[in-house]
Amino acid sequence: MLASASLVLLMITPGLALFYGGMSRSKSVLNMMMMSFAALGVVGIVYVLWGWSMSYGESDVAMLFNNPFETFGLNGVEGASLLGVGFQLTFAAITAALISGAVADRLKFSAWLLFLPLWVTLSYFPLAHMVWGGGFLSGVQGGLADLLFPGDGGAAVAPIDYAGGTVVHINAGVAGLVLAILVGKRLGFGKEPMRPHSLPLTMIGAGLLWFGWFGFNVGSWVPGDLTGEEAGQYWLAESSLVWLNTTVATCAAMLGWLLIEKVRDGKATSLGAASGVVAGLVAITPACGALSPVGSIILGAVAGALCALAVGLKYKLGYDDSLDVVGVHLVGGLVGTVGIGFLATSTGLFYGGGVRQLVVQVLVALFAVAWSAVATLVVGLAVKAIIGLRLPEEDEVEGIDFADHGESAYDLSSASGSRRPSVLTEKTAVQEGANA
Image (cartoon, rainbow, N blue to C red; front, side, top):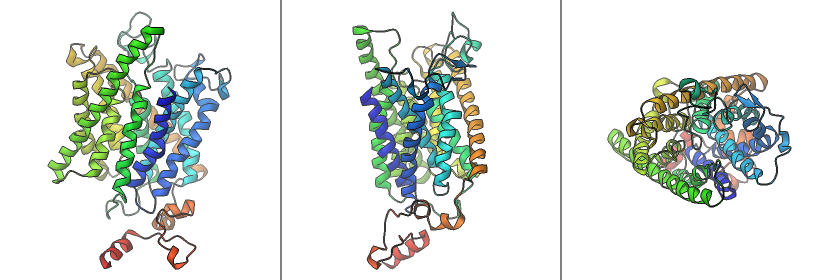
């Protein structure tokens, strides 16, 4: 558990920071990386104070969240239980950090710092409780699945979300969409190129995310009532399956994305490979313990292809999701969550399990979409009213790195002795490159 938690920590910084940082423009790379660091810093503190208590405990409130004061500040939580706290802390932090990619270049850093604790309180902690803490979206008696297909003391067909298809990826994807709409489009969106400034950084980040994701998925196994040697033997078999499924789904998604690019655009790109890797990891997250390796390959290939197509929706529908949080995490999370209903080896439609698992998965996904959308809208409007969301236009043009942080990732002015970092506009940079 300690190793798994550390791997998820690696996913946030430097993994996601490098992945998003490379995809952003040179004048906002530091801010993009800072948003990942800030998510870890803020959510880490909040999780210890009331996040764990709201997510897990014995004082359930309407099956939607737990009493935030039951174990406030981890009061009464000690010993080996702290392993679970640390592991779940990293999940909460990376979920919040994922949202930042949708609002690159234009969200004030102060607004991000205020958004983080409010959003995890209203969106992440309740969904974590509902799915993993015995709440409304789990298989308990009186939950959504039990209302649909009642069993003996609980749902006859329980929802499956092994490591966060709903809690993490659908949640973050919907939040990214809502926040991007509230903040508005970047200046020049759809009219001028906004290309990644460093694809090598993005590919390094994707590799670190893939590596860290084994902690994310393999570490999510819950022993239940098993103890001793029986638990150890079951864990070895389960973790081996999860590791293999995570790997092959990601391989298939990368290839699926590249195939779509090749057919559509005539070229298979490095950005497509990196994005396909993340799409596969997202899709297999909820399903990694329920599928066979062959089923995981199918799920990954479908996710890679659909996410490659989905990232273009922002141009058709007019929302500015800067780094494709919606196209990768929302769509990938939906593919993985719903795909379980088809491909689960024990209850899936393709394995003779009927439609019940599919119905449960679809309704759980829709509930998560609605909850995240409403919670994010409330938080976003509150932050907008209190301190505002968007950077001033002149600061956005010059670059958020200097405007909000007083720094530049690539300081080209040191030779002239200027104390102010030089932030080149894209037009100037292109012209200087042509002159050179």
